[in-house]
Image (cartoon, rainbow, N blue to C red; front, top):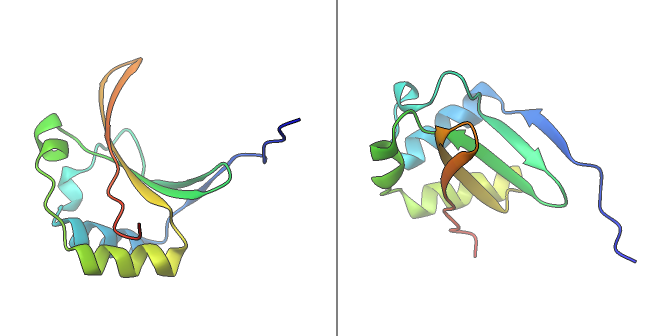
Length: 99
C-alpha cells in the first residue's frame, strides 16, 4: 500500500525570493502578480515561481552555482517555474542544479 504525506504550501521569505530571482536573473516584475511565489511540499520541497509571460519562462539562463546554493540551503528538490496559459493549462520548466 502506498501512503502519501499530507501536502502543504509555505510562504517563502522575502530575502530567499530575492535571492532566487537574482540567481535566475529575473526581476520581481517578471512574476505573475496573481500567482504568489510559494514553497510546495508533497514529499519533496519545490519553490514555485510563476512567470508573467511565456517569453520570460522560455528565456531561462540562470547562475547554476548560485541557484544550487540557495536550493541546498532551503532543502529544495527543484524549482517549478510556471506560466499559466489558461485556467487548466500551465507550461512548466524545472531547473535542477542540485541533481
